[in-house]
Every structure is written in C-alpha cells, then in structure tokens.
Amino acid sequence: MRFSLKPQDDTFYAFFNDAADNIRRGVAILAELGDESADYQKISERLVDVEHDNDQLTHRLFNKINSTFVTPMDRTDMYHLAGKLDDILDHIEAAANLVYLYGLSELPDLPREMIEQVTVLGAQADLLAEYMPKLKGLNSTMADFWVECNRLENDGDRAYRMLLVRLYSGEYPALTVMKLKEVADELEAACDSFESVSNVVESVYVKES
Image 1 (spheres, rainbow, N blue to C red):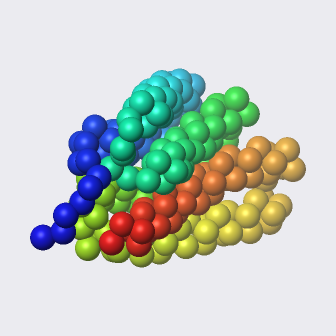
Image 2 (cartoon, rainbow, N blue to C red):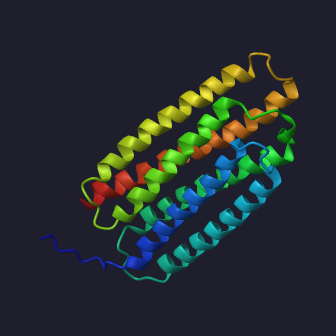
C-alpha cells in the first residue's frame, strides 16, 4: 500500500466535483439554444447565474488553497485546474450572451453545425462529471479521460471547420456571418478548454503516480 505524506482533504476534491457539475448544468442550458422557439434572453440570463456561481466556487477554492499549509495536490496544479474549469463556463456564457445580444433569434434556426458543437460540449461535460470524482486517488482509468477528451475535441474541431465552410458559402449576409463566427469561436474555445482541463489532469497523474 502506498504511503503519502500529503493530507487527503476531501474539501479540495469536492470543489472540483462541484465545478464539473456546474459545467454540466451550464452546457445543458446552452443546449436549449437548439430548441424550437428557444428564449435566447432567458438562456443567457440563466447562464450568467451559473457562471457567477462557479466564480464564487473558484474564489472559495483559491482561499482554501491559500489558507492551507500542506495541500493534497500541488498548489500550482490546483490553480491551473480551477482556472481551466472556470474558462469553460466563461466561454459557454459568452456564446449564449452573443446569440442573444446579436439578435440571432431572427434566424429561422442556428446552423446545424453550431448545434453539433454544442452536442460535443455536452459529451465533454458528461465525461468531465464522470471522471472528476476519480481525481482523488488517481484511479488508473483516468487515462481514459484524457484520451476520450482528445477524441471529442477533434469532433469539435471538425464541427467548427464545417461551420466555417457553411458561413463562407454565401448562404448568410456578411454581418450575420460575422456574428455567427464570434459565437462559434466561443464554442470552439470552450471545447479547447475541456482539453486543457484534461491536460492538467494528465500532468497531475504523471506527477503523482
């Protein structure tokens, strides 16, 4: 049995689990953009609340790290992990906010490829919520997390590229293209942030194994 001098404070791991749950909740709200007669304003407002909740959670974690003499994980790793998790919700909230502010409700529907981006984010959020509780103890199955996260990120990249092809096909007016691309860029950034989280987790696994 491996002996560790580091404390096994469940409070730190609970923070990361809660953040993963917040992200899954946020992506579920974001997915409502694809609903018929979706209320873009309400979706944006609800995501602001989720993002605010996660900001408060992140601040509490930072305070906990700063006030703890010996932490169960490297402090820098915890800062990075918390920051990357927060980035995901920042981009998700920004995407929904732009959809509302740019008046994209005037379109018959959002592009199919954009909804595919959101679908990938949903799969990434489910994966994160499944594996984040396994961070404590660094179960050997954690390797499956960053492998699958990388595969999903590639799916997101493909959806993003196909969306760009459609946007530049002449189907939409130039101003609408600019608006949709800004939303797509935020969704792509959220997708990339999930992979950044998996990179931090992989680094922790290698370091602590």
